[in-house]
Amino acid sequence: MKPKYKRILLKLSGESLAGANKHGIDFDTVSAYCEPIKKLIDDGVQVGIVVGGGNFWRGRSSGEMDRTRADHMGMLATTINALGVADALEQIGVDVRVQTAISMREVAEPYIRNRAIRHLEKGRVVIFGCGTGNPFFSTDTAAALRAAEIEAEIILKATLVDGVYDKDPNTYTDAVKYDVLSFQEVLEKDLKVIDSTAAAICKDNSIDLMVFSILEPENIYDAVCDTKVGTLVTN
Ligand code: UDP
Image 1 (cartoon, protein in one colour):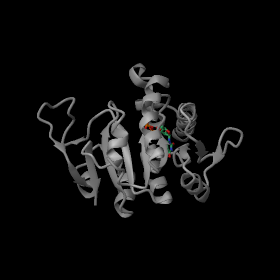
Image 2 (cartoon, rainbow, N blue to C red):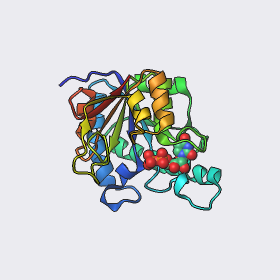
Image 3 (cartoon, protein in one colour):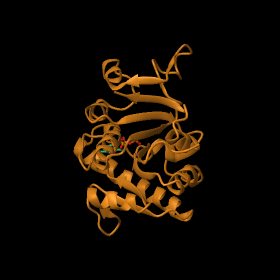
């Protein structure tokens, strides 16, 4: 199989990093994701990664807290994940740079678009921490934004479900999986694929999105080779 894309943006949710523990980072799980990522790099694919933070903290689930402060905590959580994934990649010999949307210069590079592209061109994985740097946004939106900025051809959204269904497959046995879907349908049917802000950015900038299960980590590689591993959302 040959990779179909030159530059991709992988979105890893916080949940996907926690493994069976459902909280924190499970390094065996993360290491399993790193192998197909290394394979992509070895094949000359440029890989950017946006990490979520839900395995530590989600602003919108913080109850009585001030939302902005809660979101600041969520963005810091994404940075913990970014550093964890960076370490796991480095352990298998992949060059990595972490860039954060909120400056923390002692820990990571600040996000600078052109610099990120330079790293990608040199075969380094760039992990984007702190989401968009703004409260009231999600890391899905950060993935769409960074994909647009670095001109990624596709966003790979690794989830715990093997694609997009017309209704929740965990609740309804007759749920039907889509092979291909438009962003317009995602917005109109309010399908829980990515949030509406992220869907709008993808739609307006013609960025494709592949949603697939990360329970088989090699899907990360196969999705870049256009194997039918999940649901393709496109214009
Ligand atoms: N967050 C934010 N702005 C962003 C991205 C994330 O404030 O641009 C905060 C928000 O509180 C969010 C948390 O970081 O709940 C973790 O991100 P997300 O919920 O998207 O993570 P995931 O569900 O992918 O693990």
